[in-house]
Image (cartoon, rainbow, N blue to C red; front, side, top):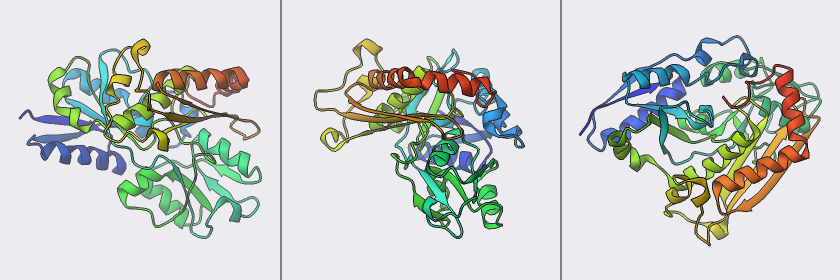
Length: 336
């Protein structure tokens, strides 16, 4: 069995993810090593991510190691991966998805509704900030960077009345003690790809790809492909105020179904079976919460559905919101 070397960021969560994949590979007889690679996003810790304006800020250095042959594969939080990978790379697998929703964390309060006027809430995500301000414009939203432990410690020390984090990361690290409320997707639409891991390899590395096929979850791949198609249509990166959440509704309960034919073939051939039904919820929002555009539709093809919902949001004024965001220097440039 071939030996694999995994490239990973050095954060606690990134290493959990890399070790998780390593454990699965070792169970199949592979020898595995992990190389920690510090990315641009890890090095810039004193500026809100939305202000950095760097393309591929959490992936560039890892891809350089991949291209140079120092590592065979990279494990990413899928939401950090640009919707168009640089030439020479491909996503070999998208793993089974952990809960994609956001979590309301607090020491004293159990929900948004309980927060007093002017309460201090921490998040560095424009997407979360915009939806939070739409719900409670009276709250004060302040930047929050650092790893999960750092963020939770600052909450416990009283710097914030509440913070918003991804549920998936908290569950993976077993740090859910301050989670008071899992926010429904219709209240706070998650980031595209949130909760899923993307396994990146060199394009054309057929041998490695074959050994990683077992990691691919067809339903997660179809849903996140839909979300990323929407993000690409809107020209957004992971720090733009765009939310996207796709899921299979009861009538389309297809556990065990092979969606690979719908996401690994050319777009014009990308069609699911007649009984398949994917539902996509998406938002584009002004960072101050003054305007939140929502759109939802059902469809049978992940890419077409994502493009249709994206186009609908642009027609309704999403283009003006995003142009204003880019113009204010609040987000990464279109299409990283």
